Amino acid sequence: MGVELKNVVKRYRDKLAVDNISLRIEDGEIFGLLGPNGAGKSTTIKMIMGLLDQNSGKIKINNMDVAKKSLDVRKILGLVPQELAIYEDLTAKENLEFFAKLYGLRGKELKEKVNEALEFTKLTENKNEKIKRFSGGMKRRLNIACAITHNPEIIIMDEPTVGIDPQSRNHILQSVKELNKRGSTVIYTSHYMQEVEEICDRVGIIDHGKLIGLGTNEELKSQLSEEERLVIDVMNMKFNLLEEIRNLNGVINVIQNKDSLEILTKKAQQIMQDVLFILSKEDVKVSNISLQQPNLESVFLSLTGRNLRD
Ligand code: ADP
Ligand code: MG
Image 1 (cartoon, protein in one colour):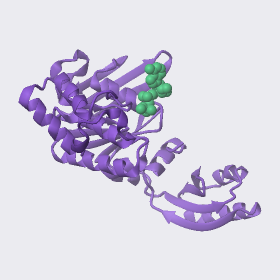
Image 2 (cartoon, protein in one colour; image 1 turned 90 degrees about the horizontal axis):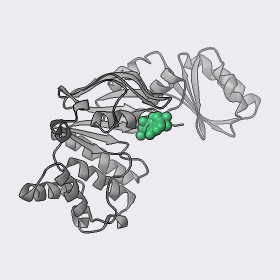
Image 3 (cartoon, helix red, strand yellow; image 1 turned 180 degrees about the horizontal axis):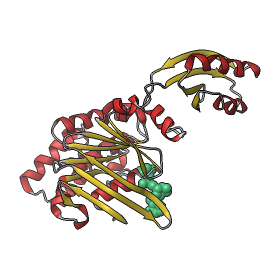
Image 4 (spheres, helix red, strand yellow; image 1 turned 120 degrees about the horizontal axis):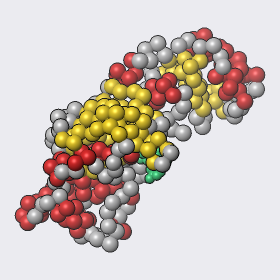
């Protein structure tokens, strides 16, 4: 049971978008697919949905081959696509009815399910309004409602929180947990490390089409057991110093944020002196220094040498 990918490869002409991914998503979990833009998340999702054919490899859902595109597989799945898939000229209710019909709902059941989905996404009051008047957050919520009217066993959400206000984002994250509590397996893609860390039971880290990390948050972070994250708040940072810090013995990697440097190292105490010396040479002002626990961002940095946020 669950979702199984075996050696899945997808090329767009000469671009290798998904590079031999194998993984298994168990029934009942919230699985996060975390990776930067262009990593191959949406391509992977589209193949799981049967909307795009892989070049090689197999994808099975509850032991059924997705490539056979049977209605049985379709009905198990609900997709919240990255690009909004709702009709601006229809009302919220009309949009939901349209999708419910696609999934084979009719009559009384259709009405009930549409009302439930409106209620769940807190759009009942707005059900007769046309979508073009909706805020970005309301559109995102309706996009979710459309995917859940038919009570799918597996809900796939592709970056459902991009470009919305914090309140709508919170609402969406809470709904993911609630849908999971009610029994749905959730596959959730994001390039926001905090979201994935907050809601997912298990995480796959994807970069350049490759699955480079897989496990619970704790398992992923325990790979960094000896590594520490030294965060130095700076003013007027000089970029030429970055390379010098990166080359210090013991520095695994450095991220330059707007007002801080994050240094991944196994020797924080020792490195601190060297870094402060380098910064002082060019009069970079340091306002705070702290040692922080590694997070999924550190895991990504350690695996790729790059910042997830770039
Ligand atoms: P993500 O969802 O993680 O941002 P995508 O799966 O959308 O990544 O894209 C993976 C890679 O494939 C990117 O380099 C992207 O530019 C490329 N790509 C995606 N869709 C197409 C397409 N239809 N034709 C050609 N290249 C594509
Ligand atoms: Mg995408």
